[in-house]
Length: 299
View 1 (cartoon, rainbow, N blue to C red):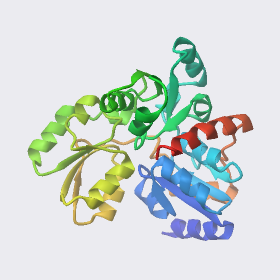
View 2: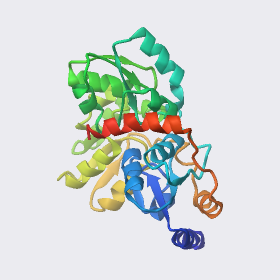
View 3: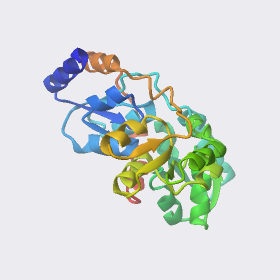
């Protein structure tokens, strides 16, 4: 409790903003001014007047906040907190695939590093990937880096030729269809909510395929009392907090190691010394911002 109070005091003194992703540790979520998915938080950062932002998440998220708010000091408390999937594709990979598929538009999942976003025509989130795929001009799409999100978008849109990159989220990849079927046998009244980064066999068992923000909204609005949640276990903290009368289960409690690196102590020292600043070249910010702003047309 003492460290929590020190952070709150320091935040007030510096007029700083603390934001945390839905997968962060519960105590980190509870100290934040806002909790949400990566795009929600970056947009919130852009709307607020605070000049210092502590982004409790992974590198690509803090980079996205910096791209949309280049004038602000964006701090990533743990610079070693990276997204393994974001590291699976590079800017050079995009340039090479453009040479192979010269007529294709490049759609980059927001779970990519800044230099990849700078090479894309448009970014997307798990919430609006389908809308982007359905509405982007052209018949061919290069979709990076998550193959499952690409395949799901291609199947539901049913009209685009998509070249998916072979990237994946190691957490969602470990959720198996048999585990979901077993959970459904045990709790037949439960609704299955699955993240589109899961394998197609898991998505086929879902009552709804949703982003983390979509799951939160669905659970809040649904009359159902029990849910099987197919995503990283960190989301359960907020689901239970916002829906105390409902039950949330997971086929298997899977944790993203990188999302759990950030501690309250990291938040405190990052804010105290204003260390671990996100720094990006102006050219990357300018080009990546265009693909992010294009994405917002599809929200």
